[in-house]
Each structure stands twice: as structure tokens, then as C-alpha cells.
Image (cartoon, rainbow, N blue to C red):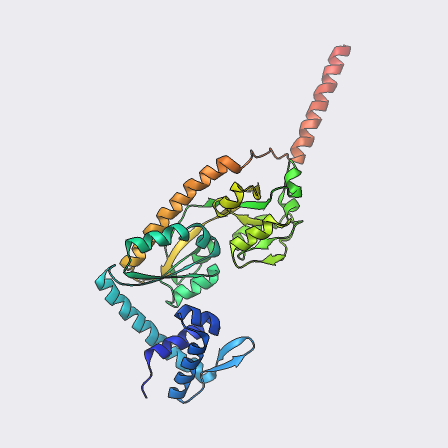
Length: 341
């Protein structure tokens, strides 16, 4: 029995993505072509590998055993192709990058064109997904590099951190004329009274600081892109989290304003690879380009902050205020007594 490698790759992608549409997109195939490929593979094997259900394709008992060996073959072939590409250097090859939504909007528009211009022979494939999915795809060798929330990638023992990027401040962003813009002092509790237009699932490190005020609500609107979330915020009383660079166009048009910033509101991204996997010249070049784009983005954030962020109002501590009032009253009584004498 001869099994074609490209069919094993299709089955490998279907297992990894759990969806014909996502697997087809990752392979740059149409869904009918992928479906036909899986049928051809099952015909060659003589047994069913996947069952179709409402929740998506699921492996049969035999399919699990078969894919254990198939995954090793696909990974081995990918490693062999990588070694050939390493020997050739940056002249040819393919580089697969996975990134979170915020990274995609902030760094990739600068980084990807610069890399493509410098290395036209390298085929660049970019996938956007949540940090946890990006980490999983790096583990399974579906991606060469992952760029996402550092606190998520660093917890994965199968990954090595290539670089940790400096934190970038984030803000609660609302429309111009939002009811909260009239308040002199805005707290997170105030903000959470309004709908949240969420782009990505907030990591635990972000959720913890806000839990003392009020439980973080289930997002009123789940958005696939920051662009959609920003459009919704500009036309409603919803809010979202973003860096200033992410909404620079809307700021310039005076459609939105940064409303609130707390010390724990920041993006901190890391670049990760599979543990002990050799960095190819393309991976090294892309990581270098990405860190350059990040430095540029930080400089732009400084410029935008000077232009758009209003001075932070002093926050009063009620306990300290009461003590101060008591001291002033005591001082006043003492002054009156001394005057009487």
C-alpha cells in the first residue's frame, strides 16, 4: 500500500484544526478539495479515519492509531524540508508565522512588508488566532514562530522564548462624547457598566486586577478584528481595550478617545519557537524585523500619548482623606482654644 505524503498532510491539518474550513485555509485548498483528499486517503487505507459530526470531524478509534504514525511522518518530512531550506539559506523556503489579533494589527503591517521586500524568495504565511491556539500550532510544527501574549507562551513547557518584547500601554477606548468623558474621575467600575466590545480573550494577568471592582462581564459583542470593534465603539456606548497606535486613525478623526489607563493595562508579547528547534535564517530575520517594528511602534505610542492622553487626575484615598480631615479639625480646635486664652 502506497500512501501519498500530501494526503497525510491533509489529514494532519484536519486533525490539528478540527475543522474542514480552517484546515483548508491553512493548506491553501478549497474545502471540496480537502474533503476529496480525505476520502482518497481513507480509500487507500481501506478504513474510515474521520467521522463527520455537528461539532466537526472526529477521529475514529483506528484513526487515532493511524494518525500517531502519520503525524511522525509529516513532522519528519517537514524537518527534512527545513534542513534543505537551512542549507540554502534565505534564497528560498517558507516561513509560517502565527500571531494574536493585537500583534497582527500593531506590528505585522510594518514587519511583514519589510521582510518580504528583503527576502522575496521566502514564501511567508501568516495566521491570526488566539495565543493558546498559536502555542498549540507551534507545538505541532504547523507554525515556525508564534507571536502572542507572553504570559501564555511562557507557560508552555514545549516552547522556547526567542524574544520578549517590552510592554506597550493599553487604554480603555470609547467614542467621543461618551457619557463617561464628562466625569472628572473615571474608575474601572464605571467603565464596566457599559458593553464590552471584545477582540480577544483577555489573559488571566489582565483579568485579576479588575476583579476587585466588579466581575468582568461576558462581552456584549465578540469581534473577529480590532477594526470591527473600533467601528462599533465609535458608533455606540461600548468600550474596548487598545493601544493608541491601534486607533490612531480614529483619534485623528476625533471619533474615539482614550478614557482610562491603569498600570496593569498593557500588552506584553513574546516570540516563541518549538523547544530545541533550530532557528532558520528566515526565522532569525523575521524575529529581527519584528523587534525593529516593535521599537518603532513604541516610539509612535510615545508621540500619540503626548498628543491625546489627558493628565491623570489625582485619586483620593477615602481613609487618608478622613484622617486628614480629622487632623485639620483637631488643629482648628487647638487654634480656637489658643485664641480664647
